[in-house]
Amino acid sequence: MKKILLVIVSVLLLVSPVLASEFEKITVSSTPIGFTVVKIGNPAAPAVAAACSLEGADIRWRSDGINPTTTVGHLMSTGEKIMLKGNGDIKNFKAISVTTNGTLSCTYFSEMFE
Image (cartoon, rainbow, N blue to C red; front, side, top):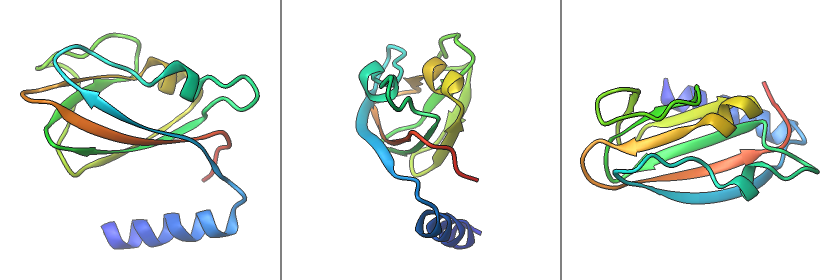
């Protein structure tokens, strides 16, 4: 299933003129953290999608504007990926580590793609 999804995303990116607008690595620790404002809030091309992968440790995340805790929020295990769509969810995203620090690698897109 993962290979099929990767192929579909790869094909979409090849036939679509969508270009990544920004990239960052975020250390997720015991304090809730969101995306860097200057990375997602460029007035000329605000981020409308974010693709992130997690390394190092499990985290919890929310995108409703409320901080996650070590026991409340979506659990994301190391090696997993998420795709956020919509500038509101991207602006409201916050993550916290469950135990030790994890690292999110995130690419932001200024155009939506299917």
